[in-house]
Image (cartoon, rainbow, N blue to C red; front, side):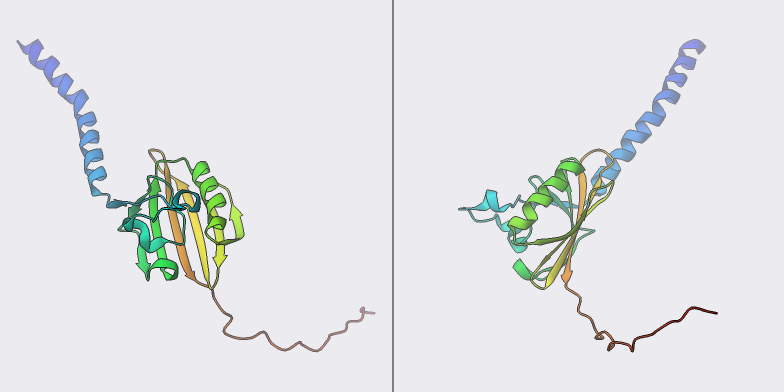
Length: 173
């Protein structure tokens, strides 16, 4: 009888860490606040209106299956005049997400300024009087995190100083 009790106690000790991990993972998954977004690329939306859930972002592409992270997003304005940070998650690998934005941003009228493909990729574009910076990084359990920041272009507050008088130099003797 005591051997049976000892074996049961050993089994409980072995499964307790696993059960704690599964419970913690379930709690963490339940804490995420995401909202599904409709895909929007010029090629996909020609001849059809964008779904209402994504209508307020008609000037930027959204990958298929994207979910907006509501807690990390901060958006002001609407349609082609919004500014702020739009944070999304997708199940697509970061390299494919980079390729998507690299191809699609120009179809939405954005002009590339600079791109860096790395562990955390960064793409920067301009359109009219706004600048968009897109950061793409890998998610722990697969897929990509996308953080898109759109802001007005900065203007130089102070004009550059007038040309300074020319300076001449002579060698030391």
